[in-house]
Image (cartoon, rainbow over all chains, first blue to last red; front, top):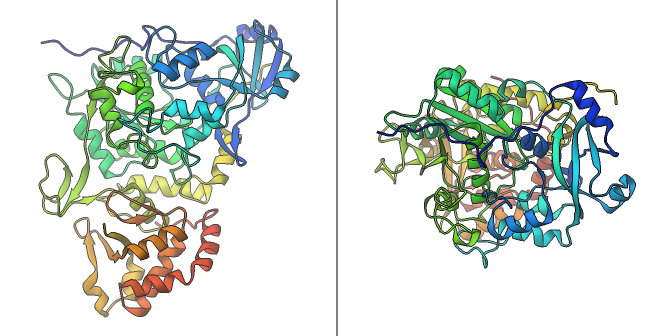
Length: 453
Length: 116
């Protein structure tokens, strides 16, 4: 019987564009023709995206085989066929965008090297291959996510200003500097993020160290309630001749919408699940990826598959309304992408079965609810007490938290709730609000060492 | 399709309704680990709430959620005062929309941490 093995990186090899020798980094920085200070993109004065997170995820290999800001031809191909120019599937345009005034001030042209500073210190370089213009960002935003007319299989409503990902693309500056990024001054992750930092090279080494041949990933942007915990535990029963050896949580850390939990609570909340022994630490690994969520349901799920395959996971669990906001997409759009494909996005069959597709195996799951008759957390496809069921509604749980009501153990593990309260105390609020997002974009998740250039 | 709204009952709220007929209307959720009132709303009342508070949404259970905390607090106060779970309490709450919105604006900046 064939045993499942660790999949290769998407694109065949891991992208690693991080210079770890400070002297070499300094030399590269000195060769730059101009300097640009990275700042968050804003919408109505509130941060919506910081390109530094994309640079980190590209250079550390989470987005392999992408190596930099995309050329116009690459963006056009993605919008048309969801493929890179080298054929590998990829969902989103990723660009380094600036204003016309900034371009004028920088005075750079194709062939120049740009030094990117973060928090006032050298961070990365961009080798400018091409400078191109986005003529109509709103059109780009629509093409990025689709429309009910063009993508009737999965898009139910036209995207608008309530969809954070659409706003990110609509807010892009008109000038794109395309080319490869290289991190030349390796950032130091700050607490609490530092202990959860497992870029693909390191995560693959960690699985091997733990003896994990099969690993199932749980995507999260949430503090885990009991429904999430049972999703993780039950989905992990897949595998090959035995359940998956490891359960990886990979949290998306970056700008989120108001009402989501703070990143610090999300990551430590998942850790509390293993510290409390609900999933023993030997089988559970909490990690994260830096990314400002686009909430693109099937497209986001494609990116999630790429990230976790690059990290070395063999399986990925997908529930309903995966990485979704509102009712723009059909609630099972992600599962459609991974089961039969979405022709209008360029995938007439499952994304696992198209050429240059994904190797990570999907584990499509339905719902978990509390059943008072079974007296347990039940799986919707098992439990017959549909009339008596009590569903875990994320917004219901958030309402309970906001009212300061100590949640029963059947909703939150007490250890997890204490993590929520710990960060609530620190930020004065249990959820992301404008104040948290603004302060976070100053603080970021990293500090940079001094580098005299 | 009917819409609902849930009013959670912590110990303090349970004390406030002690001895009243409301005690017989408590829903025991999650195996009796959580107490709540469930109000069934007419379409008109549900629409009024949705229109009044832009954050409000209907979740997968057909419950209106994401209303301001001040709304939930005011709703419980009216229930405790009138001992009713009917449309009349919603009407009474909706007469206080401006005050609720003012309180909600403050609550979007800061919420006191619960005592564990």
